[in-house]
Amino acid sequence: MRGGSVGHLCGPADRLRLKADGKDSLTIDSYRLQDEAGIRGWLLFRFAAPQAFYPLAGRMIPWFATLAALLALAGLYISFFVAPTDAQQGEAYRIIFIHVAAAWMSMFLYVVMACWAALGLVLNTRLSGMMASAIAPTGAMFTFIALWSGALWGKPTWGTWWVWDARLTSELILLFLYFGFIALTNAIEDPRRADRAGAVLAIVGVINIPIIYFSVQWWNTLHQGASVSLTRAPSMAMTMLTGMLLMALAAWMYSIAVVLARVRSIILERERDAEWVRGLRGVE
Amino acid sequence: MSWGSLNNFLAMGGYALYVWGSYGVTALCIGIELWSIARRARRAQSRA
Image (cartoon, rainbow over all chains, first blue to last red; front, top):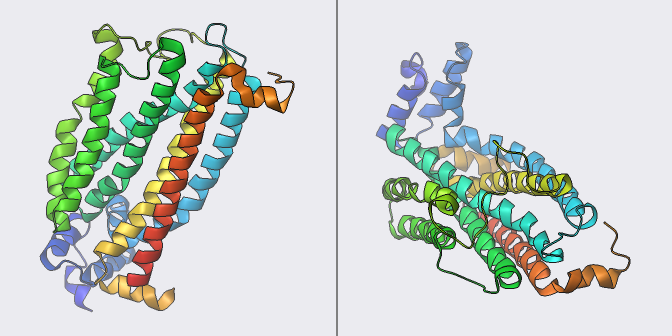
């Protein structure tokens, strides 16, 4: 067995081999040996290998998708049939349930994307860059939804679709950061180089996240302050808060399911010539 | 929260354009994303 000679090396060593010979089945062999030796400490590293993560992601998708659907149904029910009419805004406020969930998700996904990108830059793991690439389109989608629903909420309540204030402008910059990441990584032919270039952009762009979050405190803005705070009592009816949190949770679960599904395709695209992918063809 | 009738529900107290515009476009985005992911998965699997 070719992997025999590296059987005593585990975790990072495998990845060093991986870098040396790219897509050899050698890694699979050494992982198997590692299991036989009963070493469990590198479990995370094991799933950092695309061929190990591919089936794991496939098994997780139905669970997260189901959770997303159930949470969204419960959230929509509360948003439209339980939460009362707002005293000032009437029914227009019901946009909050989609707007806040999307806005939270747009920022959170960017941070997660930048973390994966940074991980890939430091550890040079293949999966990290794939995860960052898989997150970007979903992050961009939620950013667009936050901006769109914000505009449709702004018109009846502020009297305008758009103002160039700090919160709105920084969220628009977030959308451009996502677009920039996608365009940059797509423009570079070699995926590993594309990952590294994208990682630098993603990491530099993280500075925008606290700017979005604190913009309503730092600058005079038309946008209202934080809807939910850990340090003070909720300023809205309990049912409104519940609906908002359910929708946010649904958005989380949806994002996980969608990102896992996308990363599976990216793994196949990038590892097309690997032995384990050719092995898959025989199975499916 | 009781809407009384379907028409009242759809009218959203006069804010139908804004409320349904938000939810509709969100549903559209999700639909497009799911479609594009399914298409990409089909292509990746057939070329694998």
